[in-house]
Length: 158
Image 1: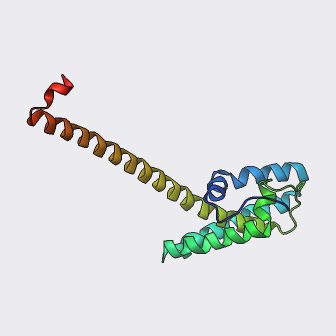
Image 2 (image 1 turned 120 degrees about the horizontal axis):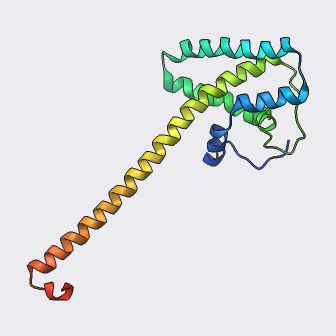
Image 3 (image 1 turned 180 degrees about the vertical axis):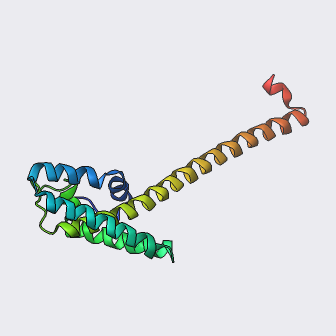
């Protein structure tokens, strides 16, 4: 499991938030040819844990987001996400604990949803700041021109 990715880096979090856990899970299921009962246990665990997450996160969404980020961090440092998304140099992986994959998927989905919102807010804020800066510069130029015209230095711009 060799990788140069660091979970603390925002680029890594952005990359992870773009990846679809279910797509890569289906790829792994196709390659490894698991039994249908094992596949069903993944989806059942996912549905059960997703329902639990909805109930548990209602009391304090922000703190539960931090908790889910901790779960995703464990998945990342433990190698699950790296091998699942094929971000390391390993050849592949075989699922041994099927319900745990469903549980990890549910926590990853919850984290991914809020991480995408966070990234969108940051993009909007960056755009707002850049637009405000541009407007401030334009307003300064207009005021400078008005000032020069008011004091008889308008010949320079004619």
